Structure formats: structure tokens, C-alpha cells
Length: 98
Image 1 (cartoon, helix red, strand yellow):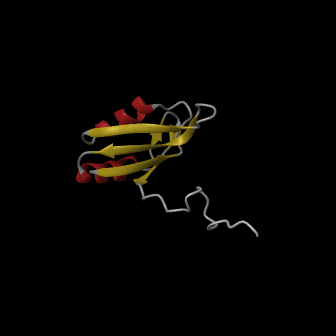
Image 2 (cartoon, helix red, strand yellow):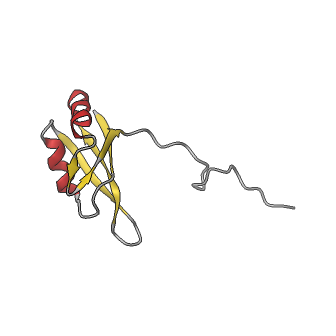
């Protein structure tokens, strides 16, 4: 299995558009355009999970810098999220003054 990042998406692109582009290369387990929680609008990127790593690698190579809905998309293997502190920030733990 392989997780793929798709960036520079047109704001009109939806899950189905992304899924269709990747299905040409193999089984797509999921395709999700990330949306802003407050507005519900696309943030311009998506994540695709493909069942076969070799098929996913081929999709990355073939789709990177190609046009989808009027924009040249960026495609690469997704990196794991970097760990931050429990509050979601990256400055370390806050301690109250006494």
C-alpha cells in the first residue's frame, strides 16, 4: 500500500476527479480532497491511498506535473506528519509562572 500527496489542485476538483486520474494506474483504496473545516472549500490538495505500491509509484511518475482541471498538479509519496506537542503547536510545552 502507498499513500500519495496531490498538490496544486484546482479548487473545483473533487474526490471523484482525483480518484479517476489515479484509477488508470491501479486500485484506489481512497481519494480525499482536503477541505477547510470552517468554509468547506477545498484547500487545493488531496491524499490518495493505492493498494499496490508499484502501481502507486508509476502513478506518481506519470501524473506529476500533468494537468488536471486546468492546473498542473504536483504528485509525490506522502510523508508522515511530524510530531508536535499535545496542543498542536511546535514550540514545546508551556509552563505557567508561579
